[in-house]
Structures are given as C-alpha cells and as structure tokens.
Image (cartoon, rainbow, N blue to C red; front, side):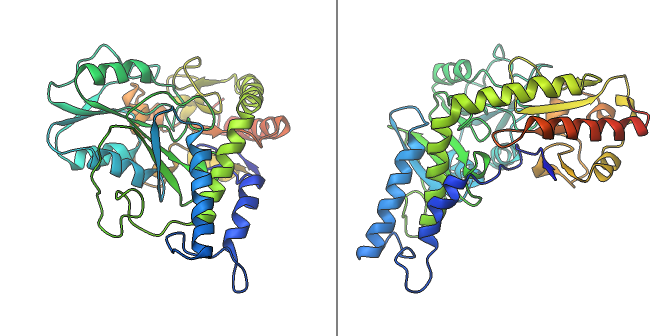
Length: 364
C-alpha cells in the first residue's frame, strides 16, 4: 500500500517508538509509575515528561510554556474557552472544525474571509470588541501558509490575543509568534492521543475542566509518560531533520506536479506547504470525477477526498467553498499528502494509478 494522507496522520517515527517503550513496562518493570507520585518511579516518570517538554518547547518561540493535552482539539478548547469570556472571537473561514465550532459555541463569532488563493485577507477589519483572533499557520486541506505575522500585529493593534493552530506547521516549518499555539503529536511522526498548547509568558488562562490540576492548574488528568516521551522524541527528530525533510518534500512536490499536470491545483502554489497537493481535473466540471469511485478503484493508494475529519459527513469542504470553488468542483477534488517516509517511486506509482482510474471515468 502507498500512504499519501500525511495531513490526516503521519507514520510513527522509529525514534518516537523507541522512546515510548520503557514507559510501557508491565509487572517487574520500572517505567509504569504515575508521574504525579512522589516515590522514585513517579519521579523518574516526571523527569521523562519534563525532558520531553523541553524537546517540544525547542520548536516554539522563546518566552512561553508547554502545556500537554490529549491532542490539538483539547488544546484549542483550552485556548479559546480559557482565554476569557465576552467580546468577539474572530476566526478565519478555513479554520479546522475544532476552532470554528468552539468559537461558534461561545456565541459571538466573527468569520474572516479568505482570498481565492486560500490566504486570509489582511485588509479586512476586526470588530471593535474582538478579544481573540484565531488563524492557523498551514491549512489542513489545501496547505496554504497564512499571513500569521500580519494577523498577530492586527490582533495586538486591537488589544486582542492571537491564537494559532499550528498542527500542520509544527515540525515542518518554523512556527511563528503568537500568544497561544496548538499542536498534535501524530501530525509530526509522534503518537496519537497527545498534543500541547504553547502559551506565551504573561497570558493568563482559566481551566476549562475541573480535577487535579496536574498541568499548571490548567489541565487535569494523569499524564502519559509513554505518549509524551514519544512526542518529545518526534519533536527532537523533526528539529534535527527539518531542512532535510523540506528538501525531500520539495523533490516529491516537483515530481507530483509533473505527474498530475492534467489536474488543477486548489489554493496557492507558492504560499503553500508543499507536502499537500489538493487537486481536481481541469475543466469547468472537474471532468465529472466521481471521487468515491476513484478511491474504490485506487484502493492500494491511501489518499483523501478532503479533510479527514469531515470524511463521511457528506458535506462539501468548507475550505474549498471559502475560496470560491463551486460545489461541483469541490466534490471532484482529492488531497494527496506526503512527507519524510514517502519515496519518489511511491509518488510515481500512485500517480499512474490515480490518472489511469480518472481517465477510465473520462475525467482526464
């Protein structure tokens, strides 16, 4: 099988797996201690967590702290709900559902429009009572890199906080400044079930769930040394390999765009993380491509018909709608995601398979 769904999740790095193993000990081992216990095994587990915290922090801007969570969704909720009440939360139209739905649930949600290239328009104004601006760094569906620096400035000019969903950016490109940043380990070759919220020094949050207050009094629950150690190792590996990974992804992107020359790119080609290829067949109707049939006929190639979080919902991608793509073209779009462990041969074989299946439908 060929895996081309890196935006949904990434393969676990061997370094992350190795880091996790000690903390998965059973009877007779010493790695299963509760990191919040005062005895030796507990202190050892806590030390592993703090070591991993430093590894994760190394890819964030200086001057903040890392709060471990169960994933990006929990981190997002802590940032949006915990940063205050009242006022308006301004979010871009192409945010992940975890951001959009949380902001809307609070009531006063202002949606920022995006241009056809997939970037959030920096010339639009914020409501005067905006308390929080939410703009992701790299979009999970079309890979566009957002003007986060400019939006951070606009938020500051409005006396608002700025929150960035950096799930698709962390470990791949430099994470830009913000007041709060959410990440998820399984998007950069770490394990599932663990993430983090980075909070700039001086930003006060309130807990959004009650309990033992294990993480700085803000996030309750027993931490998993295994998951966090794996996340730390994945972060360290990403830091060491960032330039190498970027060069590899660029080579894959160049070849993929050659192979899929009969397809139209959704979103910007330049302001984009090039491990994301969101495309549709050229033509006014997207060639009438039946994506479900395409996926069935290319069952040995793992790719997506859109955001993995919305797959099976039957809804048209809100991201493709936001950039002005008609529903008939959005429904003909597919997303290919690749990265560190993808080979050039896999890209070529996947391209042949998908192109042949699309041609058989008369879409190319």
